[in-house]
Image (cartoon, rainbow, N blue to C red; front, top):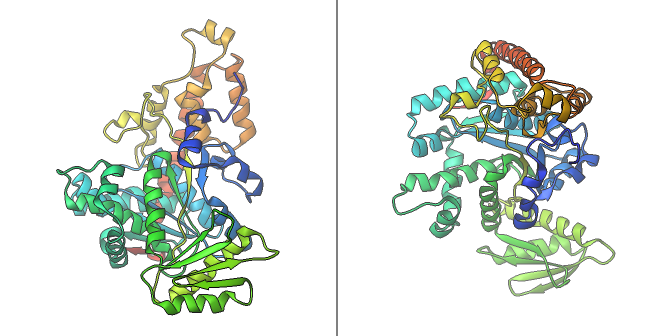
Length: 433
């Protein structure tokens, strides 16, 4: 077995996503990352869709965004903290941060009363994000309070059809219309950072959300009035009109004619870039097409990017579940209670101390090690030492449990103190609710 301190939730479990669904491995991008987050360094973030364009904008100092949403149907726990950290890291790297409290989804899908959605959204999610480091220039909103989100969702609905929503979400004849509309609200959330200007936007998600990312990327393309794509037969870049005035194509031709060779046809143009890479031609034509489209009242959306993280196993084994409080640690639960949960958590230890010393533990199967890996230890060398000692039989499970329990206690105590400070800072934040 290959010794790998980042091996909790082995990457092999996720590799089929690369071949079957077109998700790209994240690791090759690490050498280009400025100050990568520990979730990136440790391969917890394992895949992406077109994160390259976000990284290019980040390094060039150009506008880019990060967006995520949180459904206020229960307590925020360590799984949600992972997404919060990804949003906050990107904001600190220069991203325009957008945070949706998905109260429409919680109400129509889970039946949570509106007032309860408001309470959970503020108490469990907004305060915790601010305590974790979200800066005041973030745009935070409740879906039900945003007219622009609801309007954009209606526009997107005109480009979606029932059969694809049924295929993606398993809707049936018994599903309410409001429930069917909820995914389009989510797609509007993802695309909303581009309502002011087209820019690359990354959405941090678990791999189970990839079908929704693919739908939103398709909808972004369908909404655009000009279709720009690379000719698969090597014929340069082609631009086609969708339901749009002919003069848009003429304006785009004027934009590009001094830079590239242009061949105009009825309803489309062909662009050839002699001496310029095909990728550069495509990017420049897309940029020009978005500029022209915005002049004519279109959206000019860039398909959203995404990064994918591994799932952390529940404390008792299996999946973390909001209906099983013993399976997760909430960000608002008493630190003493959380520490006790850690002491009862599933480990990767052997059945006896003798076997542990002779054979070593299996940190890849240990929930306690996963907590250290995902959340509780920032120093990579310290974590590697723990992993190596466990595999060599030099470290017993009781020691790891106690260290993790102490770390959880310290984190929650400090986090909850910062949450109380965040209450006094709410006036500094723009929160639409």
